[in-house]
Length: 96
Image 1 (cartoon, one colour):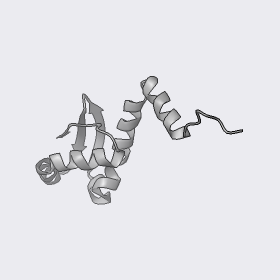
Image 2: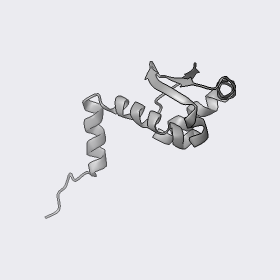
Image 3: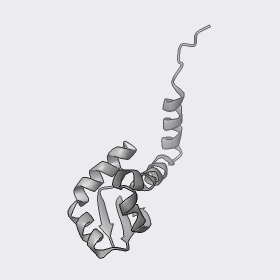
């Protein structure tokens, strides 16, 4: 017997996460985890602590030269990181 209101499990999980307020924290975690995949292992080596606060990704870099280079490409990085997650998670990046 076929059910009339069958839904894919992905839709049910997404709705549950949204209703429980877990969608944003999960997307933030996924964005931070995608840093190395998006920027590469070379840049990830110089990356320290990262966190997201008020839709701003805060990244500690150990190389001042790299910090300056990434500062120039900030808008592009925001787009690429959000695209990797598939959602609008951050609006800006601050390097320190």
